[in-house]
Image 1: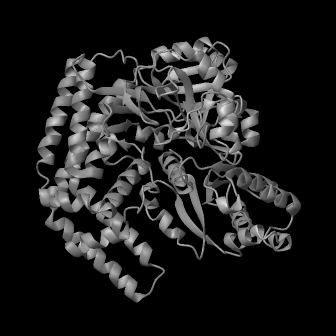
Image 2 (image 1 turned 60 degrees about the vertical axis):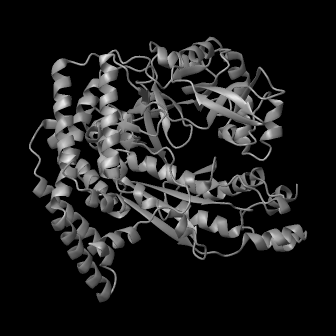
Image 3 (image 1 turned 135 degrees about the horizontal axis):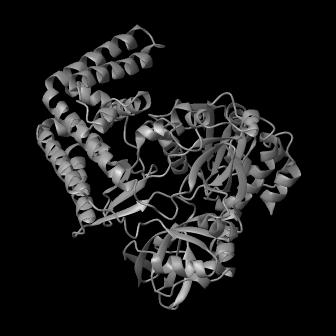
Length: 628
């Protein structure tokens, strides 16, 4: 048993740095699967607080519609000495020990001189609107930007429907064009769009801002911003306006008590072994997601009230993992295949020794899914101001259905935050717009018949790095990626090389010179500056694609240099790929080194620098950028 545990611990290890997702939300019903008994305790806290909330009793629950924009914008009154009562806006740097708080348009260039030019333009364009629309409360507000004069929305046709579309980052949000719709009228006439999440009281500690959560009621700031023409909505529900029927409440209590009884059957020894093995947890999550994609399994049983056959589940799970192990060994030699057989035997032995605990975990999860289904039905009767907004993921000239409208349940300001999503519905692509099922159920227009792609598969590539500066080797790697994908994201680090003066502005300017050459090939090219780090941005994008109901049609390719230890960058990526058609790490040849180019640059050796730039690009223009 210990050998089996150690094996899975070695297969999938935790990331060495916190470069992964800080905000990746867990499905309510997955809490016990992901965290064992501790996760189940979080589940109980969520259920009890939500039912109290609906009963009008004391509760820590807050409910938000899940909307994500970019960048995160904080704004309010600066409490620091010398800045009293002065309005500011900021990005996530507001929480640093030396925050860059912008008090005027002129300060954008002062504090963000090395930032992406687009970010600077965005900050300059939104400052006057947020300053004019501030409510004077003294609070700092946390928001996500949807659109701005520097990144305006556009009218587009998606699956034969006209939308007003804005793309803050990966996900494109789309509001149906309807002149009778208040949502469309407000968005189409506004210069700036924001979703407001919560407010903070702020105080100063030296030069640092100390925020204290002040609730999720954003009514005051939303109304104030609307007065100056900003498209603003709070993500929080002011009220759900729901009544908890006594019969439904009794059913919730019964299911929760059943789940508690089953989780008591999970031994502490098994729980410790189980939660300590991210590989085992990962395989179980993959198997559950496979059930969702192929007909529902436990999810359909819980939704319909049908009996759950635990023995059938266990047999299916062992076969599923066994096939995974066999596939990994299939291209290797006899020793690897023998090891695979041994690992499968150890897996079977592990579960035969812990069958009661495993059944308790699965039985509790069945009841947890049934409770989630009740929550879904309750929340389906609510209406948010942004409920009519659709979500898509662009992939070349196609659109993939995004994770869709869901809800987030919060327990105060604690880390106990979960999403409530109809996974079966999403997996079937059962949306009014987007997805093969929807397309066959609707009468196609002539435009749809002419433009609808025959092949509903997509590939998305990511090439992330420092690029100090972008040279021939970087270009060649991007060229390979441009030929192999429908969409390519080149993600650039904001960090600079001070000794050579290579700023993020220069890096982006050079990539923009390379971009037309890359666009001659298959992929649509997107250039992004990482807010935190390039690797974290990749993780965030992959997690979002993995949550898409079309995930099984998406292949993600991550491009790295063969002689760099970049494989370690993505050592934790398997946690976010279980729904994807495939996720591949693509090593690319390294034909030159940035440090050598920097040495030539600092020596003023123009000839040698030119030798390290790709052919077809205006090398004089690159030289001017590097030496300016």
